[in-house]
Amino acid sequence: MTALVIRNLSVRLRKGPPLLRRVSLDLAPGEVRGLVGESGAGKSMIGKAVLGILPPSVEITGGEILLEGTDLLRLPPADRRRRIGASCALIPQDPLTALNPSHRIGPQITDRLVDILGWTRRNADARARELLAEVQIPDPDRVMRSYPHELSGGMRQRILIASAFAAEPRLIVADEPTTALDVTVQKQILKLIAGMQARHGTAILFVTHDLGVVSKVCQRLSVLYSGMVVEDARVADFFRAPRHPYSAALLAATPKYTDPTAGLNPVPDAVIEAVRAEVAAFDREVAHG
Image (cartoon, rainbow, N blue to C red; front, side, top):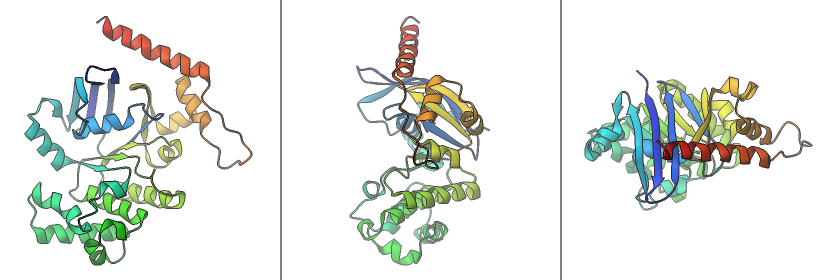
């Protein structure tokens, strides 16, 4: 069974413009799919829609979100929250703001296991120590007693990764999980996520603006512009021969770290104008039925 299927998902600001335009994609069990595009393209909006954490100013106007065959959008709100809580998890972008500064680390990992999944506190604590060791944090007992400000950014992100995998979710949304980290720590965290995903067999929807990250951790990717998927491809095929002009321009704009003398290649204005016209044509088609 497919882990996640999104069909014709449309999201808009209440009484405002569209934010997602009939987005469709699927995610197989154990697969990592990248969502790439410029800031504001709708990458994080897809993840928030799946997890049911869209802001109040935003509404879903159509489509389906099938989690292991069940349409989350057709469930009553309480049932939807329980299903998402039991089957999904989030690795957020900024570990400092994601962790509660007034609570110790231990309960921030274990409370979900106890309150949502019904684990005993003893079993949840044992699971937390096991996962902290798996994400290569030394002295898990000390870290569980610590507050977030007492730990480095890399350790905080490792804790969020451990927390995401704690209940063996079917699906994890990783929302730019390395953006707030320096380059050296980013490499360590990406390797850690890839290793955890391989060991646990978890499907991951990986939101990023960095095509270099996609090449390292993803099997497939969707390229978005203004809330519309313009290309859906296997990662190897994308890097060999992107089909959409906007995708090719994004790839060409990626800095060449192996050649310090290479200049930067911004996305050409003509490509931007063409993809904007494509979005406008899509909106006209939707408006006229």
